[in-house]
Length: 194
Length: 127
Image 1 (cartoon, rainbow over the protein chains, first blue to last red):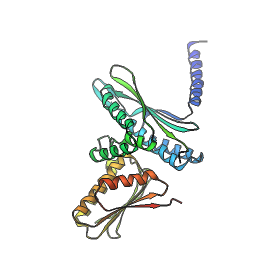
Image 2: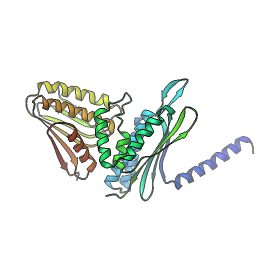
Image 3: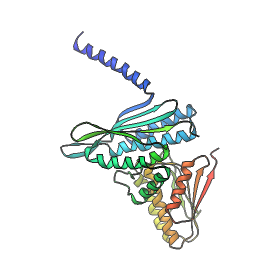
Image 4: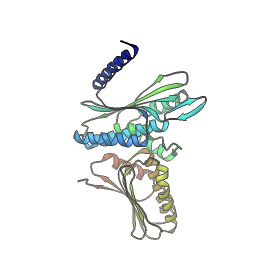
């Protein structure tokens, strides 16, 4: 077999292992690329239709919709990379929606500059330390004091996700190189909570 | 004043601002691609209206969903209504929420806590 044949064989094997991994992790939807408004609309609409067909409770449907929008918009607005000291906002990242018997998990992953690490960690830790009432207070404080950034963010996304799901935000920063980290955020929405 | 009548889509709310018929309403879903561009003309209209308003202004919010970027713009609308109220005009905010939607009810409570303006919460059935 020549080199090309080996490549194709490897590729086909990759597809099968990819398929198996998706099944194993109950992945309903996966995407890597630029997250635009059109993508956000398409994914939320597709997920709504699937939840409706699966007779998911109204409350769970609303929570999943909410969290998907905030997560997708976070990546769309904040994902960036730097080339020759110039910041490029490319809004690229990975998005996964998983569903098992007990819960939905919504995960995003995108590159962030190392300079953001401490500020983001501080915000996420603060959110995770608060109970429902504390989150309400923080939300009110942020909506009053925060200004809409030029990217159209209100600094409310993470707080809103924690409030709506009632679960802590699961996150990690993985090293990519000297300048970048890969930020992974997973939100868990329990099913059958009414 | 000119009438603002925006027909809602799957990502933008319906908006009616009509002085002659006394209709002031934002309803539906709000997650516009560019929140500032969508809400600016509305805020600008309310700003101009607040100076010439004579009768009672009953402003209805009947939203089923809004994202966090929109929540900031909704607060800006409420702050304009608060200003009107503080300058002596008669204002009432009516916050409608589906009777099974705790989150939307809670959002109304949070806004009512933030702004100093007469605020009524009204539940309705989606059926």
